[in-house]
Image (cartoon, rainbow, N blue to C red; front, side):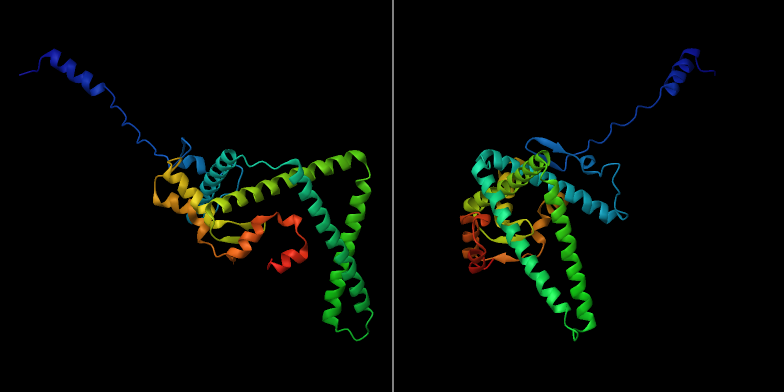
Length: 266
């Protein structure tokens, strides 16, 4: 028995209807930072950068980008809430302190050069030491030439103004960071660690991050992302005791004398 033509027509329509694509699985954010979702795609290296060759390196790089982004937002929020702003007097104080430091460094180089010149006059100086002393002397001479050229250029008023503006911008960054660390230490206490940019209240850093997690201004959705945000605290550091920490944040270090810093153990 042949099927009705109407049934064949309906079956042909069903067969020709394309299957609907499955709804894409929604991508969850790895972190919610002050209400902003951060997705894995936001942590991908820029197209112009050279990505790490191995998958583990890619993961570490993405983790560091996440940490940097979280820390920047958390600290900037804290600076805003605590109204941490360098004053003109503080900026001027830092510039003056840097000038004193440079003057001491220049004087030390002059003394070093004189000692090296005298040492190289000795006919009994071992050859290995002679080579090292000569190399050191050459370096000091090159620095002296550079400084003389720089001083000559700064006689131009426009260059001097540019230099002063640059000094002010740098001083503002350093003062702001020191004041941020001072306020954090006074609020949270804890240990401080030595870094190239100065001493950091590392325990206070951690407590500030945790405070934001409790307040839900920082929401971390998975253990891997949380480990990345907190990985900085896993490094080995040189810690200062409580007495040194109190001394360091009692008064800006650039306003202290070298003897004061040395007596305090810095």
